[in-house]
Image 1 (cartoon, rainbow, N blue to C red):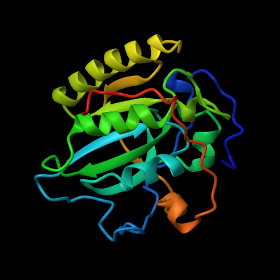
Image 2: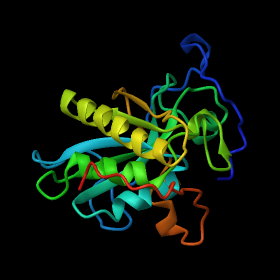
Image 3: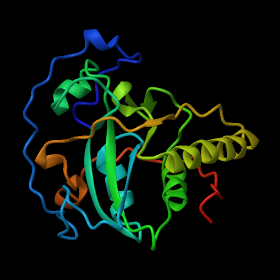
Amino acid sequence: MFFGLGKSSQLLPPGNTLPGRPQPLEITNRHAVNGNPLQPPFLPHFAQAIFALGCFWGAERIFWKTAGVFSTAVGYSGGNTPNPTYEEVCSGQTNHTEVVLVIYDPSVVSFEALLTVFWEAHNPTQGMRQGNDRGTQYRSAIYTFDEAQFSAARLSKAAYEAALAAKGFDSITTEIAPVGTFYYAEDYHQQYLHKNPGGYCGIGGTGVRCEIGS
């Protein structure tokens, strides 16, 4: 990722982060792959999930290809700076991580199945990096919308950590927390690998199966 050179490995005290701006970044409210909206309102029976698993270009593609997912969008969450820019997030001065917002139909795909996709798609043991991408913006995270998601995420973490340990991996460092504010990333980041098929993707899993969504 071109701005992925920020090597910050520690979050800042909230009062030391960048001030940001009151205005959201403008995006085109149409998914470049399936034509569905990126922004609410969504149909009332749809649910939302937010995952961070490294560079959000490749992460988003994994989820838009998942059956039962209605829409995806990339953005920033988990930090303190309102409406940050990509450059600000990559500076390590916002405390945000790169995330994917997943809008899905629970009658087709369960949250547990999405957790399986999440765990198997990256290495959640690496702390403030993912592969060669280093910095707080690449940390692994699950931001939950209700107690059921929070509980399912915690249970899945314990189960997958045991599976990883059996293969010699370190403990999982994934952050699991109630969702704060999701800020949409700049328009050119949305569905980036569809618009730029030869673009960079540093996402890669451990090869260890996660059974919780079976």
